[in-house]
Amino acid sequence: METKVNRIQNDIETLAKFTSTPGNGVTRSSYTKEDRLSKDYFIGEMKKLNLVIHEDSFGTLFGRREGSLKDAPAVMFGSHYDSVVNGGAFDGVAGTVAALEVMRVLSENDFANDYPLELIVMNAEEGETFGPSTGVTNSRAMMGTMTQYELDTVKNRFGQTKAEAMREYGLEPDLEEAARDPKTIKNFIEMHIEQGPVLDRENMEIGLIQYLAGIGRYTIRFYGSTADSTAPMSSRKDALVAAANFIAQFDERIKELGPDVTGMVGKLDITPNSNQFVPEYVEGKIEIRTFSKEIVEKIDFKEMIESLLEKAGEAFGIRTELDEIRRINYPNPTGPSIMNGENVEKMQLICEKLGYSYVLINNGTGHDSMIMTDFVDTNMLYVPSRNGGVSHCPEEWTDYESIKKGADVLLHLVMELSKEG
Ligand SMILES: [Zn+2]
Image (spheres, rainbow, N blue to C red):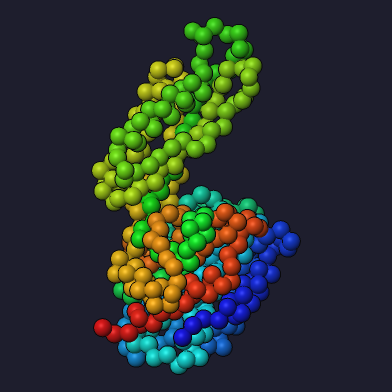
């Protein structure tokens, strides 16, 4: 059994038309008209396969194929189809279309699954739409970690809260209705484009993820005061010198913590940012990535950053401030998301059988799979991104043949996991 590349191409090209910025990449924000048009397309395709279709109160679309085992947990597979503003046609969509194609192949081959199979099609994954750390909405609603507070506070670029956007879309968000007992899900499998250069550069067809690093984000602020460049050194309150001092201390502290964590100040905004004036104000962004659950339990990162900030502020006589950019109801930083190791081995064997080259890979950003690892045996596979791995832009590209190969691996894994014993 294998998937068909022409159908995959047709799905992706059709979905790419549902954009609010024709000619300038794909713009398909969650809970918009373009979102609904795409969903209707998926529903139409799912109907052809006689799947039992259900849309929950967050807009997550399920297409279920019953198996011989009644009331057994489902093998769930899929991804998202929303995009950033002026994004590409492949982020999320490649995996969603691959999962749909798997259902088609199973259907035309009258495949006899024991466990029920569920295609999951998600529409609110992108964190850009409602601001940092507000993405992966569908999986959080499904796993019961979404909050009413978030629904009522975060806003999109049209000024609507998440709940308001959902109501206009025709949904009444209901946390209880959307929450699903994790015991009803046997596996969660997501195929996705790599959004990085590794597979293409190494000429590999499939990337098998073992874990995704955890993430922590913070905003730091230094309030000095400006003065002319002739101001005596002893009189200055230079925000940038304090920031530079903090950055050096922070870098040292992170290095001392060993290989389980990385961190940096990756962005600085300096006011007035002029060669003639003493910097009055500096705002910086910290990003921390974690590679073990222990480091997150052992170290209080917020306290660590606060104390370094205080020290730098005191040394240069200026006020400092820390804000956490965190996912509501989650620690900051989060621990890494660890995939099911047995299924990684299964996929290695499948790749060998199908003659597809593969590599174990652990880079990547946020995905719904990341949320799912806390509750369900979860796995992810990547297919190569071209053009240097750029994503979230019109130049994002993955070859249709590459998506087909990923879909084949997904197909064979789903078939194996759907069998008893
Ligand atoms: Zn994505």
